[in-house]
Every structure is written in C-alpha cells, then in structure tokens.
Image 1: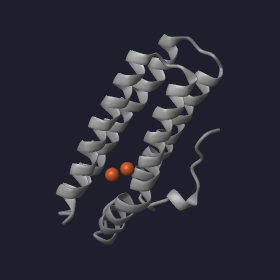
Image 2: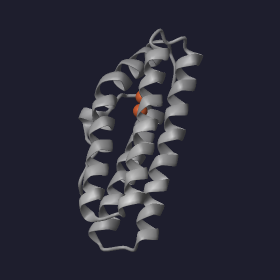
Image 3: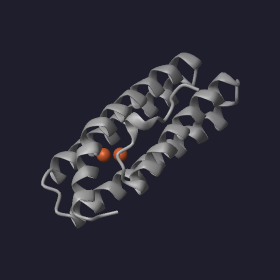
Image 4: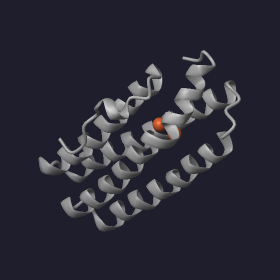
Length: 136
Ligand SMILES: [Fe+2]
Ligand SMILES: [Fe+2]
C-alpha cells in the first residue's frame, strides 16, 4: 500500500476523517490498478473516482466552514480551488502521455503529498474550529 491512514491524520471530526480515509483508499486504488497491470480504462476509472471524490470532499469542508463562520474560509477555499486545477493538469498529462507506471507514480505522489500536507495543516485547524463551535 502506497499511503496509509494513521492517527497523525486524524482531525477528530468524524465526517471529515471518514472522507479523508476514502481519499487515501482511492489514491491506493490507482496505484494498485497500475501495479496489477490493469488496462487503461480501468486505471482511468480509478483516477476519475478520486477526482470526483476530491471535489465532493472539498465541498463538504467548505459548507462546514460557511456554516460555522470559519474566519479562514476564503483562504482554505482558494487552496482547494488551486488544487482542483492542479489535479486537472495532472490528469490531463496522464491522458496525453498514457497511464504508464511512471506517470501514475508522478501523479499519485503529487496528489498524495498535497493531500497529506493539507490535512495535517489547514484541515486540522478547520476541524478544531468547527468542533470548538460544537459542529460535527
Ligand atoms: Fe480535507
Ligand atoms: Fe481542506
């Protein structure tokens, strides 16, 4: 397994944590589809699932932030928006160059690294704020 969820990624907000677990599972599904030599279409399906799930997850977090008047909402949303563009660029490259194991490695590493950093920083702060306001 390329990425593992552990307690260092636990924000303490159940819904967000569950979605983060799904994101990591989706990332691992791309890596294993590639490592198992699955066909292009199946690999692209796993990539599409991750990108769709990412958009859904960001929207969940943004709604919570609006609901609880999170002061850093606009900054947090900007990080999400920028990352969605980055993911679009990376998957575009994957389509153009084909899902070789090397390209899969480049794309999943870039996405994985961003996600883990974002979870441990921005998401932790946001989850702590929402929880302090009694949100779940
Ligand atoms: Fe998140
Ligand atoms: Fe976030």
